[in-house]
Each structure stands twice: as C-alpha cells, then as structure tokens.
Image (cartoon, rainbow, N blue to C red; front, side, top):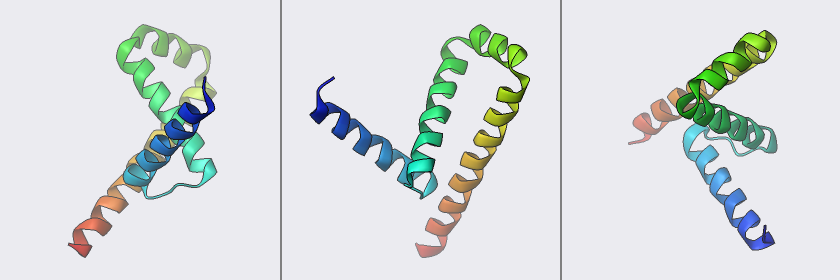
Length: 85
C-alpha cells in the first residue's frame, strides 16, 4: 500500500476513535481496530465468529470486555456532549 494512503487511513481511524470514545491514544486506536474488525466479522460471518468464540473462550471474554469499554466510553462522551450543548 502507498504510504500516503496508510497515513490518511490512520487519520480516519484516529478521528473515528475520537468521535466514538473521545480517546486517540495509540492503545485506544489498536482497541478500536480490533473492535471494528470483530464487529464486521460478527455481522458478516456470524458462524466464523461463533466458531472462534467456542475455540477461544478467553478471547471471547477479552472481546466482551473491549465491547463494554467502548460502549461505556461512548456513553460518557455522549453525556459530556449533552451537558456542553
């Protein structure tokens, strides 16, 4: 891939992370990438996600924690934006 595309795409992921969670730290960017990829797999190939969940219960638990973290951060960000408006 061209470096300019990679840079532009990373900026897109960073903005998405900021709008979704309010956090653009490198750790959060990696979490958002995993969250987004797993979400896509779960929606487009649910049998694959189910098989992986059964084969990797510890991974399933980690994904669950990640989804809850993203949801909680998103709710907090929405509440903060409501009080500012």
